Length: 293
Image (cartoon, rainbow, N blue to C red; front, side, top):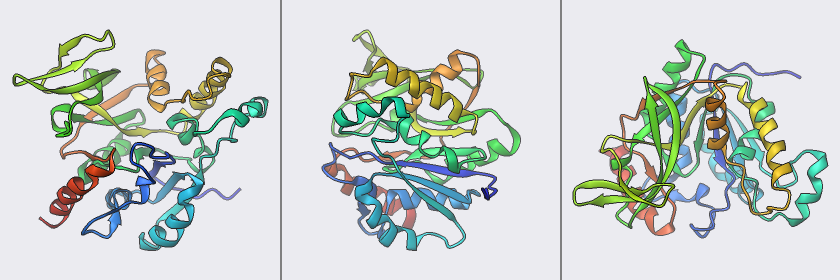
């Protein structure tokens, strides 16, 4: 097999079905910019030195991406589309496919990219905008280091006017990620950042706490961990037809087992994300202003 050489790749998780959005938000264009959030991220990654993009998609968006989005991307960018299909499981688990409706989750989505990635890579989600400098941070990281990395975003800058948000709060020591703990319904109360911890207690969160917004820098060795973890997941949850195999859980397990370290960088720009269609116009306005001043 002729393997193309790349110093740095980008993997975009765009296979979700967008049930809360009410459609395929991966291909929703930003008003005034004539492109998707994903295309802005690709442009930022390309400017930072990424030469290969692997987009994990669902079948419903393939035609739109091929006909509309791909022609707008740089001609010298190596772009691969990979479908995340329910039937992409080890042969001994094929019987589970008949009961499954949704994809297997973000861990399975990334695993679908395995055969195409042979170098350090950045992982993002299609419907989040991370900022140009975040790609530069990880591009520079991999020029000097071989460990993994992530860009964390100050949680206080990721809150929503629509109400409380759920965020993975990073515990960090000596610039290394220790763990990410999910807090629910985070909001500002009496000038303090508050959220519901895993014990369902309402607690204070440090004002400078960083949140994991799914911006990872990884190496191909991680795919072995993903494969083993996915087999274990299917064996354990063979009747859990709605359970999902999450990427962060596998990164956490690798850290816990002292198999890999993850350097944490603080984002220098704001993060913008879209969960509900009603949020798209507001985010579009912010991104338009960001791009055009």
